Structure formats: structure tokens, C-alpha cells
Image (tube, rainbow, N blue to C red; front, side, top):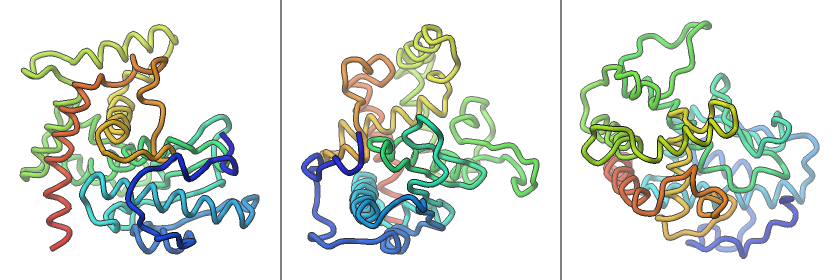
Length: 263
């Protein structure tokens, strides 16, 4: 889907901008983003449209998670690129070495929520788990979901306990004794494709997060997330009942975090 053909009618949610045109500077200041790069081949019309779409999407995400908008930038550590440094055939990607969420100019529609989770998963790992000094040039990229899988000791804090409950709700059965059917279906998808991607904990968590945002937020924003309810994709996403359980766990984590940040 080309950005220039993407219509505002695909979004249903609060009106944050009141019809005003915003800029990428507004995005950086409102959401606490670190650095923003815009590709040199992005013209002014595309830049204006993208700024509005991204602003609304990040605002929808903050609204959904019940956190203040400035928290989206992960204390200024999250960088953003639009139409610059993308990967061929990829809608969007998160580059952990640069801590950068990159959206393709004409193919980034629907991937923002998925990639934001990757950024959060990366950011929160060193805050929630005892993974040692991560400042060295040879430091391996660590995600919180990987720490959970490896049973790495977490730092004692009520929010960290609730973070673990998000992983438990997504990847384990209700009694916590076995892997969830969602995991099994992801493994089957990998076998069918002859790869190891869908069953990676980082990817299962990102898909679960975007699925909850699309299904349980009460907001319809196809730029933020789309496709998790398509019949062709349903096997690689949590089912509707599972999404409700994950949503509850996400709320239990992000709502008190938002309240603390708003004090």
C-alpha cells in the first residue's frame, strides 16, 4: 500500500491534532523521541502526511497503554527513521544497535505497533533483568523476552513481576505448566516455512502485542497495526480469548507505570 493512497478514514479514535498539520519536530517533542531521520527522497507532501499518520499512531499507542505520550520515546532512547535506511521488502524494522524504529516510505503501514514492542522489549531488558554491564562494544543484544525464556534473574520490583506476567500470559498455559497453543502454532508455521522466525520469543511477543492493540484497544488505526485478524494470518497470532488474557496482563503493567509517570 502506497503512503500517498493511505486514507485517514482507515483510522477511528480520539482527535489529538484537531485537524492541525504536525511535523516530525512535533513528534520528537510530544513523544520524547531521541533522533529522527527522514529520507532525502521523501518530498514535502509525503513528509506532511507521514507526520500526521505517525503522530496519531503514537498517540493511539500511548492512549491504549494508558501512559503519557512522552513515555513512548523510552526516556529519549528510541530513535525514529522514515523513508531512510529501510530494508528491501520490509515494511518496518527495529535496529537494536541504533535503537531505531525505521518505517519504510511506501510500505510501513500497519507495522508500527509490532516494531514498538521490539523497541520496548530491548529497552526494558536491562531495567528488569540482571544482565550486567551492556555498555561495551561487544555487548550482545538482549531482549526481555529472551531473558524470560532463559530464566535470567529479574530485579525485585512490583512492575518487573507484572512484566513477567505478560510473558507468562502470552507464552504459557493458564496453569503455567506448559507452553501455550500459540507457541505450538508458531513452531508449526516455522516448520512449514523451513525457518526459525515465528517461534522466536521476541517475534511471538511482538505479534501478541500488535494483536491486542488491534483487537482490544477500541481504536481502529491501520497505520498502527493491521492484519492480525485476517483469516490467512490467524494461525500465527493469539486467538480472541487469548488476546483478552494478554490485554489484561498488559494493562496490569502499563497502567500503574503510566500513573507513576504522570505524578
